[in-house]
Length: 199
Image 1: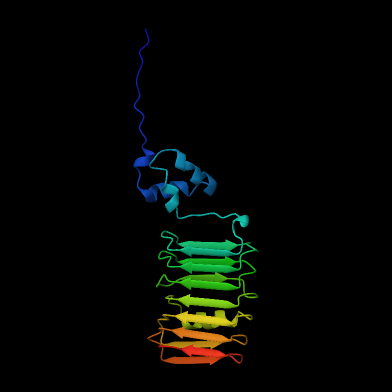
Image 2: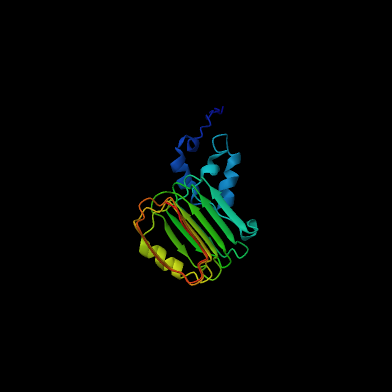
């Protein structure tokens, strides 16, 4: 006579907090992370808040726009030859942006209103740069602008420093908006056509 033992099915993984589940999922390729949505109701949307996303080169036609993506700490874009517009808007947890893509002509970053590391190697093609509510140091900004030989348009909004020094042979438009602490501006821009230093 054999005894049948009933075993209660318990899903202990689903009881973990989101940060622990995200840590576990960080070891999987992104495609498998998305596939976990079929495991249970708890897992159905857990991948939506995953801090790691992986994009295929074919996903971008020409523009990447990330708006209010909570949890993103770092964004690295490389080898995306079709990508020429990048807009990052109100990504409050973003700490680092690395862009190694050759054809970016427009970069716009709004927020996160705290220090943000920006590394890039698209200097040949960037024509338009917009930085808003990003506390960067004056020397970093000066050095980056100088490395952009095709830059024609620069908009700086809500710049928290008291001085600004820029040098660019190609810059045609410079907009400085709501920079209430700014008291000194030094610019060397021989092709400048529009300068709007609004308080």
